[in-house]
Length: 217
Image 1 (spheres, rainbow, N blue to C red):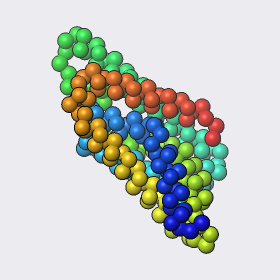
Image 2: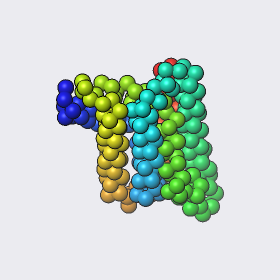
Image 3: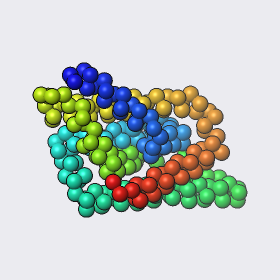
């Protein structure tokens, strides 16, 4: 297997895994629907920062220590699961508050009713935290990258290259989702749709948090 064929094979595997729905996708779509493209791209930048950190760590062999240590892995796994569940439950709870406010006739700004004052920095922080607290991302890099390193190639250089490709692929995929969402923005800005989006996102985050917390590896 030469470098080009290794990259091609990696692209096929990485793309397949990328398009599968997950917490990252839920966060990006919600940010795009509720807060717009700026916050959505800030979320993508946060997710990409987390993925790049995991990828570089895997290339350097650092994240292998986490995956090799059961205590370190479980600590990170439980922390990530708790964070996802907390974030999901918070969204669900605040949507209930939104419904109560609507029923009582209160005038509330939708953009702050669910998450409080939202800024691009906060969106970036949410993206990177979600990614860094998911040890399965580290496992992906540690398990997958060595399989696509051609014989005789530098593991460090190839690992960094594949990590960069994976991050850029994520930016491209999420960028397409954001643009597609923007085309239907007028319909998606309806309060009922945004309420449904927050409920769906909260439920997805809780589910993924529980799955992560209950998983053993």
